[in-house]
Image 1: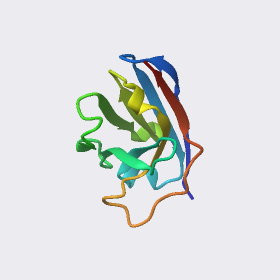
Image 2 (image 1 turned 135 degrees about the horizontal axis):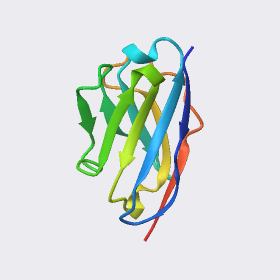
Image 3 (image 1 turned 90 degrees about the horizontal axis):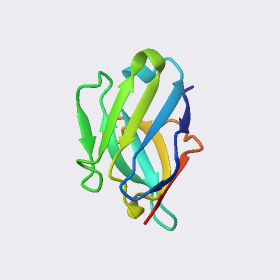
Image 4 (image 1 turned 90 degrees about the vertical axis):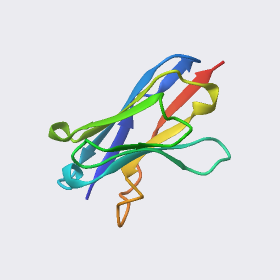
Length: 119
């Protein structure tokens, strides 16, 4: 069973950058398209970025396109989210999981990592 552990969140000023990591245990990770999600207080969880298992095809929601970059290292069973030009509206708990556009089922959710962007 795949377990997901997100890290790298923190407090940053608007315009700053953070790099999130999602470490996975489990043998199916390298063959699974993965994605990053976020959930702000009082809002539903939002899918913001996806990457195929090979790492050569990516997807971004309009809210993060041009500012965030998703990547992966299958040898390390890790997915990354580089976040630049952060805005206060990016404040949320960030999670990784299987890409919902492709996966037939999702993995168990990790604890997420909190990102706070101050104005």
